[in-house]
Amino acid sequence: MTLRIALHVPGPPGIRVRKALLAEPDVEARILHEEPGQQGNAGASGVTGCNVLTVNAISSVSRPLVDEAVSKGIPVVVGEELPARYPVADGTFVTRARREAGLAAAVALSMLDPSNPPVETRLAWTVPGRPLGTGLPVTFPEPMGPQWAGRDDNLLPWPSVTCLAAPVHSQWMGISIRTRTNEHGREPVRTLGITDEAAFLKALCLVSATLAAARDAYPPGVSTPADPGGVFMRLARAAGLEIAEFKPD
Image 1 (spheres, one colour):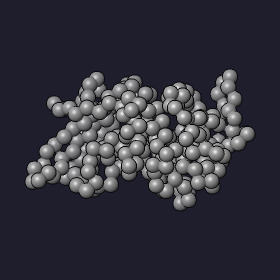
Image 2: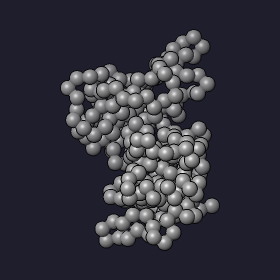
Image 3: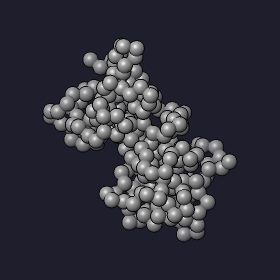
Image 4: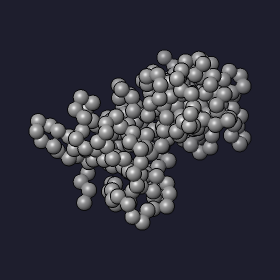
C-alpha cells in the first residue's frame, strides 16, 4: 500500500526530510509549502487522501492544514512542541518529533521494560545554546564528552526520572541514558549513548515519526515519538540511528 504524506516543513529541514522519504518505497510526499524556485501544491487538495500530515510547527500558516487533518481523522506529526492551550481532544498528535528531548525519550522507552519500572533513570540530551559554566555534570559519548546540564521536564511515565538538558555550541547532538533496574534482587546500572550530526538525527526522528504515524502506530491524543509497538524505533534504527552502551568516566 502506498503511504501518502502531506508535508509542511519549509527550509533545510524540509529538504532533508523529502530526500529521506524519496528513499522509501511506496511513499508519496505532497509538499504543502513553497520554497524559493518551487511551488507547493496545497491549493489543489490539501491533506485529502493522505495518511499523515507533518509540520515543523503549528503556526498561523500551518494551522489550517492541521485543523483540516484533525477534522478528517488524519494524524499530525509536529516537529516542535504544541502551542500552549492548543485543542487536542479530537486528534492524534505526535509532538517534539524534531526535538532532542523527543528522540531521547523514545530511545529510553525502547530500552525499558514497562512491566519492570526502573529504580532510577537519568535521561540527558544536548540542545543548541551557550554552554553552562556550572550545573549537573553529564557525560555523552565522544566527541561531546562531559558537559554541564540543567534540569528539564520529565518525559517518561515514571516518577523516578531525572531529565537534563545540556546547552552546547556544536553541530553534534548527544544523548545519554543511565538506568538502574531491579533484576532478581540486583540493581545493575546501564548507560546508553548516541552522538551524531544534529541535523541528521533531527531529520531521522521526524521521518521515522512520520512513517510510524502513517502506519497508525500512535493512539489518539498526544504522544512523543515513542509508540507502544516500537514502530518508531525500528524505523529509526533502519534509517541509521546507532545506539551504543558506554561507560562514562
